[in-house]
Length: 479
Length: 95
Image 1: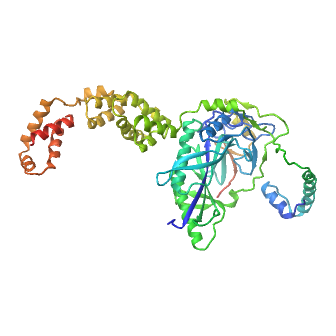
Image 2: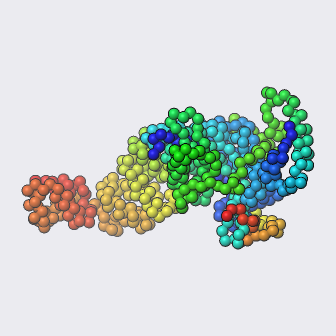
C-alpha cells in the first residue's frame, strides 16, 4: 500500500515520574485515591499559594537525560502554558518551553528489517499533569477529580525519524524499558503513567519537505499506537490520492471503531501564550550534581543485552527478551548463577515456562511464589539427570502451585528418572514382547515405528525413563 | 503597534472574557495604548543579552520529595458550588 509514500512519525511520550509528592506541592501522587483527597491548595491554584519545585523530579529528569546521552541544561526555565479547561484550575499548566532540562539525546531501536536505527530525541521537559474529568452518570454535568493535578510528568519529544508504526512502537517500548530501568516511572499504561501522542505525516519519496501532519492524542497501549498510526497513514494516503489535502489537526483514536476522528475545536486550544512563570526561578544545575547522579545509573538495557550475549552466549533475540525489564534480567542472572544447566537452557526456561506462568496468572516477578533459587533447583535436577526435561515441566507446575521444592516433589510423586540400564532393558524387552506386529513391521523397514516403541517405554515408565538411554538400548535391541 | 477589533475578539475567546460589541472600540483603544507604551522597549538594543527569565538573580530552591499535605477535601469543598461523591461538578465539557 505504501510503495509510493514515505511515512514520517514523531512521538511525544509522557512518562509520569515516580515521586511520592507532586512536582510543586507536598500532596501525595498515589494512584487510586478517593476523588480530590490528594489535591491541596497549591494544586487547586488558590490565590496566595506558591509552587515549590520537587528535587526528586529534577533528579529523575537528569537520570533520563544521562541515560539517552543528552545534554543536561545548566539553567532551565519553567513557563506557563495558558488554556482553559475545568481540570486545570490555575488556567495554565506549568511546563517548559525555551529552556527544557534535557536537550538532545538518542535511542537505538531495531527497524522493520532487524537493523539498528538511531532515533533522535529532541528534548525532554518537566511539566505538571492536569486533573481528570468524568462525563458519565452526572446528570449532564462533568465531574472533576484533581488528585492527578500537579503530578510530575517528563515529556520526551522525539525527532520525526520513525518511518513505520512498528518503528514507533519499538521506540516507545525502548523508552518504556529505560524509564523502568532508571526507576523514574512505573510505566503503568492502564493507569496512564505512560502515554503518547503521535505526529504522523506522509510524503512522496522524491518529495523534500514534510507533509502536513496530524497529531494523534493519548495513545495508551502499544497495540493502539500501532493500529492508530496505520489507520491514520491510510487515511492520509486516501485523501492525497483523491486529490485532497491533509489538514493540520488533532485527532483522537477510537479503539472500539478502530478509527481516528478530529477533536472538536472546543477541545483544542493551540495558542498557549507561553511566558516564563514568575513564581519560579530558573533551575541551576551544576556539574558535580550531574556527575553524582551519573554514578548511580544502573546498567541499561542495551549494555545488559550485549553483556548477556557475550557472557552467557545467548541468542540475540533471547538476550533482548530477558533484558526488557530489569526484574526479568535479574531473575535470569539469579537462576543462571545457581543452575548447572547450560546458560541457554536456563534462558529457555525463564523465557518459556516461567514467563508463560507469570502471564497466565497475571503476576509480577516479585509476587510469584517460585523464586530464582527454586527454579535453579529444578534445573539442577535436570542437569544431574534425576529427571528428564519433560518430567521437569510437570515438577515446575507443582512448584509453581507451591507444592514444595523440586526435590520434595520429585520424591513425593516418585518421579526420579530411571537410569539403571538393566531396569530399562527389562521394560524394553516387555514392550517388544507385547507388540509383535509392530516389531515385524519395523523389522521389515518401517523405520518410523521406532518412535512408537520409545513412546510405549515412556508410557510404561510414566515418562521417567532416561530418554537417551531408552534410545540407545532400544536401537541395540531392534537391530 | 495598535491592535484591531479581530485581535481583541480572538484574545477575548482565549482568555474567556465576555466583551460586548459595544465595548470593543473602547478596549481596542485602551489596549493599543498599553501595547504602544511597551513598544518603546523595542528601541533598546538587546543584542548579545541573554533573555531574562526572572528579575531575581538566583536559582530555584528545591523541596525534598515528601508528602506534607493531608486530606482537606471537606474544608476546601465548602467553597465549591456543587460536588458529587467528592468530585467538583461543572457544566458538561464534551457531548
